[in-house]
Length: 183
Length: 183
Ligand SMILES: [Zn+2]
Ligand SMILES: [Zn+2]
Image 1 (cartoon, each protein chain N blue to C red):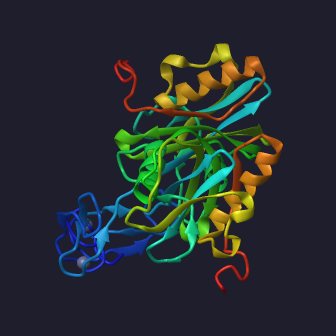
Image 2: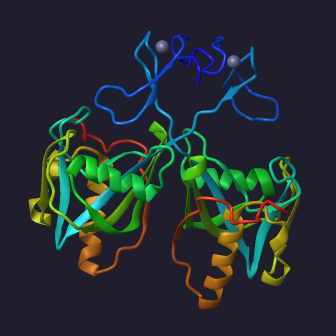
């Protein structure tokens, strides 16, 4: 951030009065430009024992498999964001959503919220996907998953499925596991 | 938003290529300025059957009672944000946190995450509080609560407490209940 989005003056880095950390502050109009984490809303969608994955058509991690997920938009709810992303990436309608995994990624200022639900329609690749498919546990392309959040969510799911209980999971993923991006 | 925070040029409102909604876009440097919901992290802290509330020293709703809560900052986790806000507003240390309520407030682009936990220290008003106190259910100042999210969380808690179960609650609070701000 270089300029004030309100008045166009050059911003400065300083601790505002009454605050305890540095912010971008405009010396001209006094606007404090706060920066806050973003929410990524995604879904873990079951069709029986199979799970819906999308192969990414976009960077980063093009060609790797992912859960439908993306940045939540203003004026929508977390449910609406998860439903919209699944529709956009997998052309799929879903239902019965409940929050299943909450991931803190403080190194990139993101909070992932993954909702578990059921597939209620067919599916097909949207513009951001090369392919969409349903996978049994033994079919999951573990070496070709896009992000640590995806692998972690799938491991939770197959473990929980054997126990028949799906509690909310919360985890901080501070860095990708060693070697994750080395393939 | 009037100016590009990257280069200082005047931004325009348009749908970027490959997108499906209007954004602020810079015609000079092509930066797309996305705007996303913010997370408010808060706590419902028990000491036995009593709950910790703070009386607000700041606008809006100065003088009204609230749960410790505030905007999550970059580079922290949701837990860390909840712990920090409780420390700042109630000078209290807490433990045993688990996510208890998730509120979507799409009309103001906010997502509330309220964590339930236990009081592990004394407490006192921080700079943003006039007073901090523990309340039994019959002592809660229902007509002097600051926000719908606070009232809703407290009602969940006392109902759950009678049943001895504390499931995750999720609710969209699109508007304050009629008459809520009329007092
Ligand atoms: Zn300014
Ligand atoms: Zn620009």
